[in-house]
Image: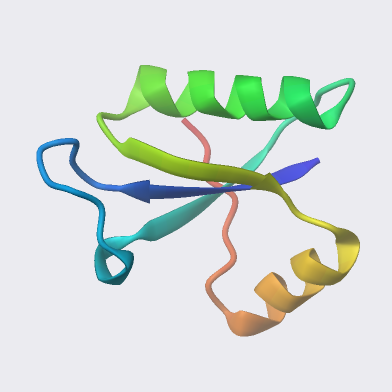
Length: 76
């Protein structure tokens, strides 16, 4: 399952939409909740990012992300 993680690069400032970034993780999980928990764990262990939101991408959303040109799976 592919998850999109929205984050701020630092926890020092209040989140602003203009500075929100996203990364994509391929998580092998039994269900969506376990995948979100695992995605949060991975990002928190490997970065100092302020995680705003984690969402599971549907097939249609994944295709859109691939076509937009910004799609790249992040590996830690």
